[in-house]
Image (cartoon, rainbow, N blue to C red; front, side, top):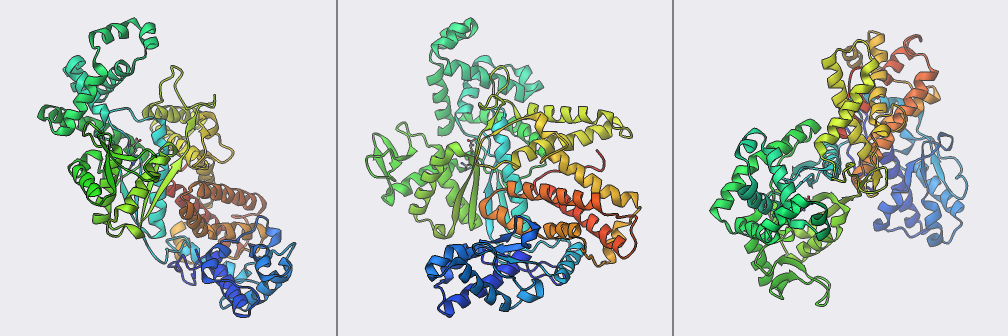
Length: 620
Ligand code: ARG
């Protein structure tokens, strides 16, 4: 992010975002400081310093502000304000500066260098964005190959609310990185080989019901899974509380051990267990596919744990041969933090491989086949240590190309109920994802009850988009690393930072054009000049043109909530504009200019929601 992160968009006159252009000018100024001996600034210091060129919090301070003088002053042995004066002077002379920005005034306060975008430059940029298919968003200058590993549920157990976070955050990151111009490869690393299959295989042989499996395989497999799980995990107090369970447990005293044996047999290639696994998998997949379709989430690949099984023994052998892993009490592990700390296990004493082994095989496979620059793992923060160890091991393993791959755990917090504890049903079960979506949609449907002019089928469609959009947005607008409280009431509110509010904003913006009978295609073809003369037009136009800057920031830290915050801010600015200024009723050329601004706002909001995986509706 040195001001050269993005290349010009396809728009005529496009030259990166205003922030890019200003950062380039600041880079010039800072290099000048160093050359003139005012302050030692090395090339390696530049990126962090240029990060301090950002939009201002309040329009009265200008549009953008550079705040690095305060941090640099010590190094230069000057007062921050004096240093700011030196920077500002060089800024004004930087190539390209004066085409886009007014001369910087005197630094403000302790040394803020505030900068205002020139009206003509703003008009040119927003008019160019209007006719640009990319809405003024530049492509990255150096596209990377980025693997996004997300969703990745353990199949054959019902997907629960925890999986929504990985699915929704991962999908949004993938969409937005692709829009930025990267080569994105999405992969659903399914847990399709774990102990849950031992449970189902063992349970099926004892409690399976052929007719039930034929009628509704997921329900039957779910029933068996839950039953065996309770049986295998039952504590004495569970048995005391449930005589039926106690009777079953007495009948199958070795359940827990036998379940593990069935898993081991599956892994060893036992033909009968393998046949059962193959029989159950299609139903498991169909089940999650249904959810993905509903969520409008798609993957390029679905290379689950089972896919990597043939490679695991080789991975362990290779780690041992390279002296990275060794035996310890029958098991094999990588001692990352010295001999006295627990190792990163890659093979258990009984010969079984682990989650870690599969993940190592997966990294090697991805490197060989995809040659990525980055791999993002969108997974619960509770797996933080696993990924720390995994990445450290992978780096030491010496796979060709590993040194230049960024391995990143995009961690997220827990979804809580209103009692502040992990979100559960009243009965204390985890909440299934399917019923969660159903309820969101049902509630959205109830809210559209008063809407005339919508027939039932239309209402259903609107409710699906609004209900699912609400659930996704409620998740994406959170700071991903913190826990958040799940609330249907809040997420469906029409006010505040919610999907419903944003969808409503789109409908409202586009309603203006509809009401005026505006032919949007023709307006687009006419490539009108947008002249943001009023402060409210100006504020709206500047926010629209920040789209590319915001996406850059989202990418830098994998934080979609920066995008939701910006969308919300944009909708607010649109309201201020719409409430204060006539649009359809004003004279030309303002009328066309304002209509174009409306149209562009609508397209930008729609695109922003689209990058979050959220749809829009015509009316609501
Ligand atoms: N299946 C795992 C779980 O549900 C998540 C897998 C994440 N991806 C990975 N490559 N480990 O906890």
